[in-house]
Length: 151
Image 1 (cartoon, one colour):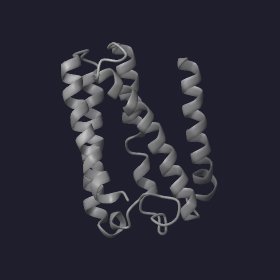
Image 2: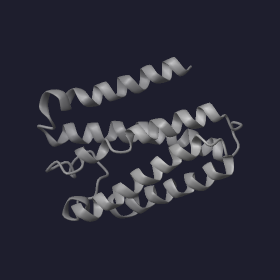
Image 3: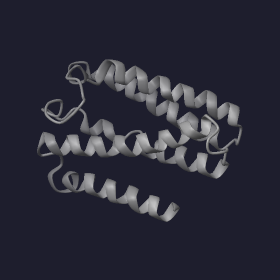
Image 4: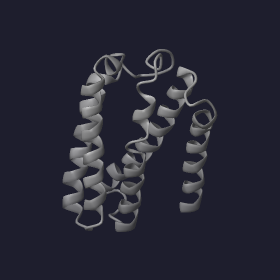
């Protein structure tokens, strides 16, 4: 199962990055697709951690570390696709306020990255209570961004 997961993740990322490699977000739609692909991967792994935090499935240190590591890897990828002119229009949930308040938006994005980095470190401890607490901090950082900068 782990191999198929890695293949799926690589496929999603490669699909999203093809436009980046060749066009460098030449079109707003490329940035939107890239951003959505990154957020899909983040959502999948965050959801897996949420299940563990709720006790289903039982806590598995290796799985928690793996999912936290994927979140850490993905945490900074979406932001380069946010400030592309026009990527707040069309098939996206990005609120135009993100572009108008770039510095504020990026500060919120940095809080998310920091919270995810701490989660990755905490996951290595194997302490489920510490993981639960830091998971909550990551969730708060998600909500802080989504409540202001997501339609």
